[in-house]
Length: 367
Length: 266
Image 1 (cartoon, each protein chain N blue to C red):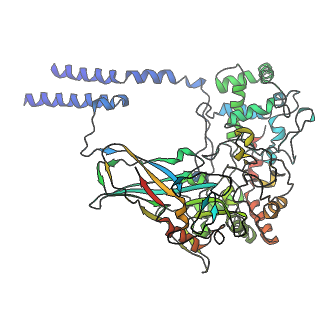
Image 2: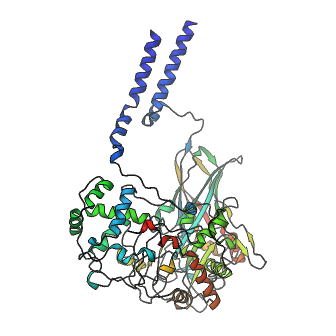
Image 3: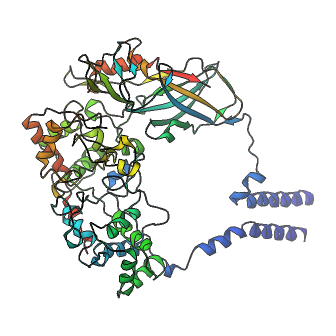
């Protein structure tokens, strides 16, 4: 009897000891049928050389959220006269850049002040400078998506109107309900969905990626991805402090993104645009802009924050001989390179190994 | 026998009872006390930087500092890497924290480094660390946070990672402001074909770093920037400004000069 009593006591204690936690779990897990489905980013294998993608805890990726974000990215109702969408200035075939435009055209033909940035690998950022836009005006993709809708040079719409238009459309309330559990649409949920889609825009399948996977990881990749002599020489110029010295800002093969995401004044002008200082109000940030990735350059001309260079030849010649060394806050690494014609050709040959055709033709990124 | 059986049941019940409490994380601290022979404590390192005994000022107007050759300079960037912090006892026993720490003056949160390894109580005769990575640790691509920062050292120069980036401007021999970029890593010699690469980290034993540890503690590792450019080799900015990464002699000079760069303070 004593034995039974003892076992009974133990069982009761065992059951009672964790009751509080069990209740919590019951409350936190909604019925599976109502939950959006988690979306797992598919990363190229060599992306394990860098930090994990940064996904905000309050906006985890879901199949429903990403799909809604894609629909919104191509949605012209985000603009005042329903004429343009995000994709109008960020087209998939141009690595989400603006189809050769120096500066993008907003509603009614207004001209923006900067070249539209290409969009890929946005879920990563450096530890020291996780900011978006050329001048670092925002620190999350969600914040970034708020801007163009109400920008007087871009979509020229109010978020109240956008929410109202979407609320009245056939599909959207249902799609928001699926993605976020509510059919009441507001700016917060719109930018969350767009940011989810943008985080899926991963580019990591260029010739150099395949070369790296084969030589570094021993992974077989389709096609012949060995570097030509010119590409190989160009890579050495890129990596050599004494010649190109590109890698200090644009990264190394192990860095994968081909940008350190730092804000730098590369010496474009003697009296530069305020750049990052427009946001930070720090005079030491005048002329500093976000270092862009060197991936997909074949699709993203023209170059620089104001699109001043139409070709890669012009860009390389600028770094070779055109730097304004007296520009305020110029980065210490900027100096005339004095490359030969052959070296410049080789450097461009290497840069073109970073183009990822499968990214721009990926059907997952089309409407 | 019966009594033994009863005791066995009671013992089983007690074990299950203890396990039932320990299964809930919140209760851990209340019910199980760790049994330790020696107390262990948390070490926090403050990374500080000076020039001639004065706290380093970055991005100053003009060129407020002087090297041993009376060449004036300023500092615009300072980043460096330390690893394998080691506490050594009288009897030669060493406690080594195998971690590493990247410092950039652009991010004040990197100026403090808390070791993962807890340090047992006692008296230690010295504290030391490795500047950069030793041969075992200096493996290209091995550290994802450093890769993300682009802190890699080019493979064609021996690979691994940068140990130091110290940049600024100096007044050259025509009294014109010119840039210097003192980057340190593997020493690579291009006078041979193919290049020969030599490991270039150095181990620091901080002077006068005897310490009694009886509670969580902190101390400073002071970097004296002027020492990178003297003792024993006077560094001439007119010769070694930028680039110095591919110059083996410059890399080795930094290694030699580095031994007097760091001080201990508590």
